[in-house]
Length: 361
Ligand code: SF4
Image (cartoon, rainbow, N blue to C red; front, side, top):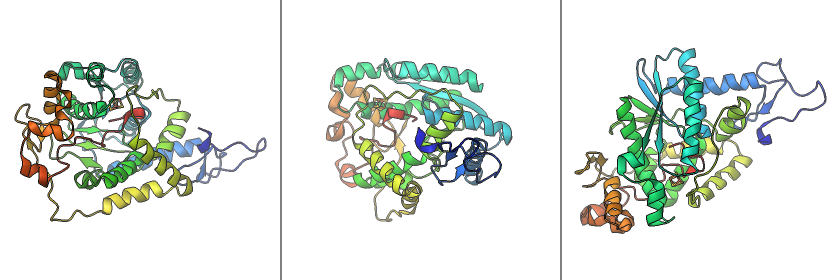
């Protein structure tokens, strides 16, 4: 935590804030390395996010917006900042907190207690949707059946849909998620490493899912994790939950995360540069992209006959959990031509979801 905070020098000494030139600097901004005071940091941090919202027209007056809330640092800061900007700049938004309860004892039950406190602290109505209600299974039950391999595939696929289902119950126009610049840079890197062209083309978009039931937006697209956690949340003493999921494998993404942190240490702009590289990739027009349709079973968007959640669920219910994993998932969606043409179409190993040491959807 000390990394971002300027150590006091002599009594009464220390540098002046390079913005106001009046107060003592309290921290070095991770993003720009400027020495600034707390008050100026709050101001620039919040106004940069406001500028991102305005420049990208993320919201329209009168819209209902659900904030994907896990109780983690990113979504807690997002709730705090959006509630503040909505008041300060008269966005005219109806804000809600939307949480997904995966049914993970000792993790999600505790983090949901944090979200319930956030509901009171920020005066935002909270809706919780659970895997048990939606799918008839908790993650605890799924892990009992399948073990700790592929558990995040089930969880990620179910969460994506659960969030959409919760959003439609709330009748919101959009879901705002707490994905930050570090998450997006990691995802760019992981998609390159996996050669996942379909995801690479959309992972840097600040708004996604416009062709789906409810679009999602990322107001923290350019916000550094260090500024969210070590500075804003820390100085403001926000109430957030920081324990990792007990089922987190944290392997592949963890290495990418460490690599990016190393780059950031040498060159703070590296995170923004990777996002820029991701944005500048052009997908060749000859690359076959998945065609969106709807799941024959549940009506959710899908590029296959059955959506991934239905395939996984069918496997669980039949006692054949591997049915939806990798190549074995083809049985229910059998279309060899499509399989050949579109290798990544149905998201067996989605990496859009943060693997959830700090899960914020
Ligand atoms: Fe689900 Fe995340 Fe836990 Fe994996 S790490 S089981 S995706 S909450």
